[in-house]
Length: 279
Length: 257
Image (cartoon, rainbow over all chains, first blue to last red; front, side, top):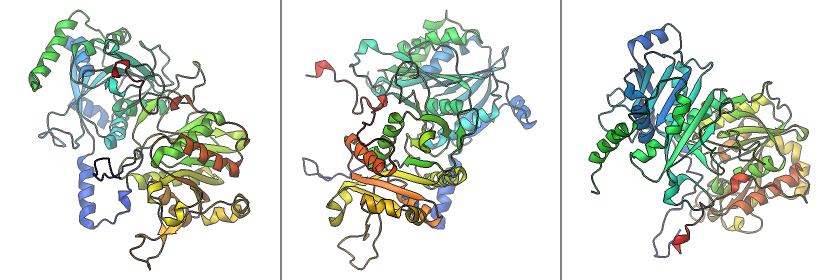
């Protein structure tokens, strides 16, 4: 395709890539591909207590699984819930891909999918996901994590950060209306979400979508709260937007609303020091 | 794999399966949307697979507030029992390097379900047509031998044009064996060749198009299918689903001008 300025651009279809699998692969290519696939496998590492439980053929008891995807969601949970210090780290999920930071190999430290369990309410599990999980790893991550959980009577709550640029609406969104919350729930979720449902034609993608798909297909009660913000990095106003969810989470765990502002500031300040490119 | 969304297992024996290929302009998928929306088909299950990019959203065929909040997944199966029709809708692209696996999963399911025939709705890049393909209609068909045997008369009556075999490098190697090429067709060619090799009754209906506003292409394809399968009266209108709003983005900021 030629542009106005005379350059020739390759034409890409928004739907289709050329089918690479039809190309003939020699043994070396096949081996490289196999090794890459192995490197990209999602691994779950549990603490000794949980590992022993799983080895005995049992599953992790869980009535409430709270998943935070994105920095604002994770920081919100850290500030309001995890700050109470009644939580044990029970495991982590490692998913190496092209966007993983160096030094976090398949079994390396610094992986950003951490599982926490409440000391007094061991059936409540929280997971922070602040790393990128690639498209080809999403299904695997979900199946593996849920494979370890007892799903009878389980309710899954997902908090997810998103950009308002991904939100489609007929009326132009001015900056005063962001950030805002929208929800999507599985058919088995009978409770009332704390915010309006995600309107057509909007969809969710990524890990929240993979988790919601799994829950829908296996009739597990699940709700995703997606926070649309015009700020790309950690931001206390965006984090604050998740507050209404505390009313629902507060039924199963103790939440700490009083320390909110200081807690959020700590998370925002730490991030600003790292990203000082545009001071 | 197929997971039923109802209490009783779904029965597809002797049903016709219509499914899209994720292809240029998403025409097959748009056409399937029209079929599900117009015939008011009910969802009977999910095609739960690791080969598609995960996505989720509310009911794309909602007719009002009552049914708006129903979660839908990347691949779902709908039926219209009175027409003995089943439809598989695919809503997201196939993950790279998983096309073959996805085709295998589809074939296994098609064989296990006992569909009498499968129709794949697809499309191909209009800009890659050769000289003979540039002339006449932009609609083409392909049929595997087992389905051809049963549908020869219908095809003759419809006067459809079969997808041409073209040389791999037109104009360069005149002696090269012409072969089937469906550029931009995603897994279409793979499904068809597998169907021929494994004796599946499978048809492909495709049209040549480019990326852009592909709604007219979807209408053309679904009308073409309707000429053969008679799903709707020719005079009735296809119902556009609510999910087709804002296909080209959000509203424009007033301050822009």
